[in-house]
Each structure stands twice: as structure tokens, then as C-alpha cells.
Amino acid sequence: YFNIPLSEHYTALCEARACAELIICAVNNSRYSSIATYMPLRTRIKSFCDVKLKQHSHIGGKFEKISVKKITDNLMDDSIKHDDDFVGKSFVFTGELKKMTREQAYTKVISGGGKIQNSVNKNTDVLVNADTKMTSKLKKALELQEQGHNIKIITDEQFMKMLESPEAIEV
Image 1 (cartoon, rainbow, N blue to C red):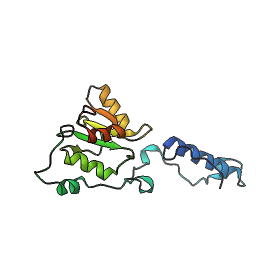
Image 2: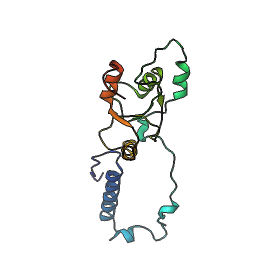
Image 3: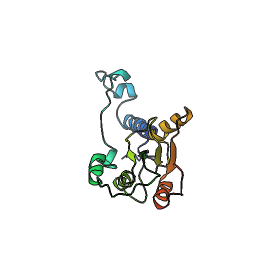
């Protein structure tokens, strides 16, 4: 309605700017002369310690919850040949993969003998970063690298090469 741009959708700073612009536009298009008169005096602005975090899925359901246990149970077969690039290694994924679904990627890692983690920690071996911006998982991996932990950060293209050829990337 107010033509407020949302150039970097889903980034906190962009959304905060859009909210601020929305309030400014609402005040300017109302009978009130300032934000103080626009906001009723009875509205209590919460202090930071009053705010409770809510558990939620990605906005718009972009990523659905994938059951690693279900994938593992489906792959319980001793005849599966494990891949040395994956055996015993813990993988974390961030961002949307271009050439396969998250579930397909998890299946490849698990069937190759690897493990899937939901978050980056000092036990993470590989972060598959399919995102073009800084994510919390990438930030955490970089922090842990600085502390001396050996976390390999690869792109989704490098992950695809790993699947194609064991010599494509050393993990």
C-alpha cells in the first residue's frame, strides 16, 4: 500500500527498516503529529528481557522438517557401499541446494556412511553452504575455524562434485 521496498527479503535489517518506514508512513498519513501521539499511552513497549523467543519453521515453509531417522531406517542395508568422503563425517547444510532436495542430499550423505547434524558445532566436519549470504550456520563455522576446529566449508557445487568423484574434494 505504501510501496515500501523489501529488497533483501528475510533479512532482519531489511525487515526492521521496512517496519520503521511503515510506521513513519502510517503516522504521516494519519491525524497524529508524531509517533508519540500515534501510539496510545497505554501501549507498553516490552523491554528486551520480556521478549520470549518462539519456535517456528522457516517463513513460508521454505524448508520442511526432514526426519534423519526415517532416512537412516530406510537405508539399513549392509550391502550399501560406503564412500570414504562421507564415512564417519558429520555434515550440516545451509541454504537451498540447486540440484537436489535437502532430503536427497541427506540420503546421499547417510548412504555414504556420514551423519547429518542440524547445527554447526565443534564436531561438525563439513558445512555445505548453498547460500549466497552470511547465515548463522556459516558464521558459527567460521568462528569455530578461527578457534582451530577443522570444519570444511564447501558450496553445493562442490558437494555435487563429491558425489560424482571421490577425488573431487578432500574432506
